[in-house]
Length: 411
Image (cartoon, rainbow, N blue to C red; front, top):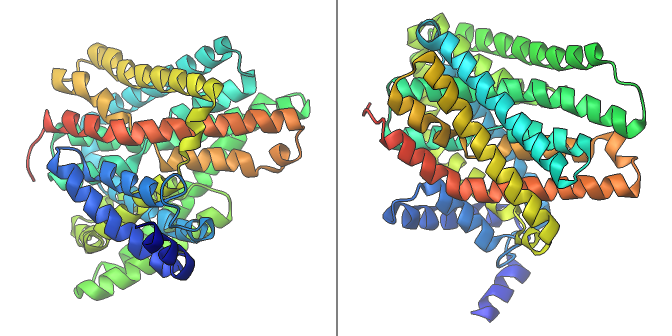
């Protein structure tokens, strides 16, 4: 067996297509095994990635993972469009105010609990604020995959999609402000709160603008097409352009693509065919997306006891903030009891957005030029987030599945 692994590593593992194929096949096998023991397929995809990645058999080169990150960006753009497509004006009129208040409640309670808890633990204030903002992020990918797999619909799913969409937009604002404040503390510059908030809102507005333009172009170009292949080709091309433009400008592709989906579904009910045209592509993208996430996780983070303890506090306080933020505000807003009791559980998964935000911190010029002490603190922060992602992507999806099953209506 060891000899076979050595042959694979020597002759094949350097090739990007081999890496993609291996992640897909192993993801499929572990996804099927997970479903047999009543776990979401996502959990199996992640475990498959861990097995063949740097923490397991090391069959995937790090350079290949960096190249495959383009798949993650494409997948997140699909996920964002699907979430936006569920956000119709009719549903906003029905649940809008409640969704906004529920989102803000769980987001700020999570931010506050995590920030205060980590400051009490001895972490620097700016690190605690950054981690508090990152804790507010959810994993829309996990939510969409579970809902699609269960073919669930109804009031619970409407609330869930609405909160996930607003939560990521709100997290970007919250994180942008926390990041500007943090870099000001690191640089020793007096912080101008109005400039920080303006910068965060401009990022949202620019992302929304690109999404609106992308949605209008898709609608005008594709709406009258009947051939499904033509619809798919044109939609993919415009989505790729929308995603690349937002990434190149340092904006949020999640917000831009959510806007695309929301605009399409509200411009015409016929645009549902555009969203349906993407469905055949989603299953393999989801499988490789989560397998890549698993392959990038390093189990070595569990060796550092200080990171381990801080990570456990982060995970615990985040879960408390998410669950009780929904629970208490639902009671005040007189939301149905099943939604009040279970909606918070479906917000625990955490992956792409959180990793993206922490990598943004790591790549920032202000952080790259900081002292060795600050660099060490940033590395600790990265490990805490990776630990949280590892835990929440394994435990979160089964809990989210349980929550959805408790409120399930078949499509």
